[in-house]
Length: 165
Image: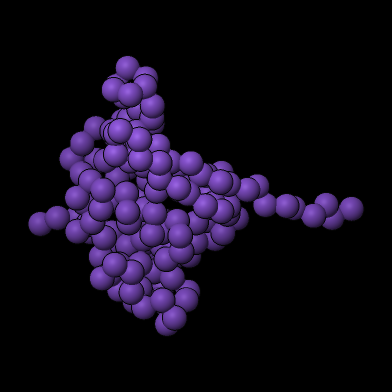
């Protein structure tokens, strides 16, 4: 029997996490998504998007795909109060039966491990990490040299925060 999880948040970051799982043939672990806009979204890549009450009824752990730390704390509290479990992204490797360092290795390769001297971070993982750091992804373009999908140029933007003074 395989372990299943619910991704909390069906936005771009949630989709990016799904893509990361898919890249490593682990997408069957994802039962579905939980999002407050579940009535509008309904489905992502064949996975059902449900409301919180239904997601909790599955009695599966949640992987939160939200970057705002205040909201993350609120969501963790909400899940805890409902008797649910929250997984950290770093714990996913252990669910895959692999060393937890595999996540870090796959996010960013060392120069020695990359045959072309570049990181082999996918554009989806870069977008996820940039989004997590508070950046907006404006555009991503794959550049095909002689090695297919070798480079990706990403245009990112730090959101303007108006000074409250």
